[in-house]
Image (cartoon, rainbow, N blue to C red):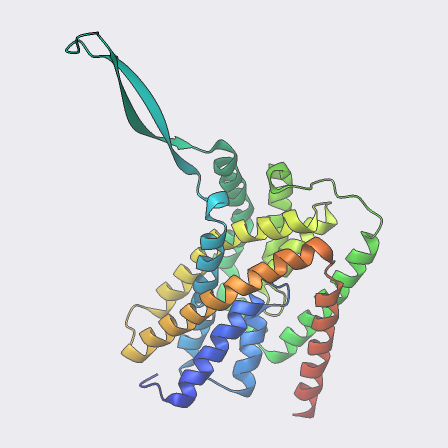
Length: 297
């Protein structure tokens, strides 16, 4: 990418909007960006786009960290009152001083340990199969099939869970076994069109985690997962960015961050009142449309 004109600028903004909306909804952000690029291609090398469609997700990740920082930062500062005798005072008064002390929030720290455990499967398999999956599955046909397949799965699971009471209602109740199972489901999202949040939420619902807890754990899981994936893509691409490429990354990530704030609020309000069947129907409809266009072409 040598320069950015107005048309390319609009494409970058649109990709950022697509990423910001779809990263947290279980409808596949990478799949949507690849589909967009299939019809309205970004004027850049395939190597850059492969990296860009992953690294842009850091903007979305920053949004969730900003919004949930109180639940995600495992360190806090507390004030300690220190009483000391003031021997210089006439009536031997006690002098009170306030000290700041750093402490660890045990529940949040332990949650990050569980997240680290959940990240192990995708971290190992991502290093081994990333290039293979990108080469053989990063295409329109695969994306459309995965959209339809997981759309059907969402609908089926929600019908099966209709009269079922979740065993895990809070993110604090998620144990190591539950975390590793959700992490194994996250591996499925390595195939474009699956959706990382969709795979983890489906896995969580199957083993009895509530929708709200599943969504929140997905937010935790996204941060190390996407940081690792982005680092891997940047290393593979190299650090020799042109000015236009740097601006593309900054603009796309900034737009993704801004839009993600609203998408996250929408999702959390949505799952408190509704199930995920709507997203299932959306995936199926989009997948069928893409399949039709693919075969017509």
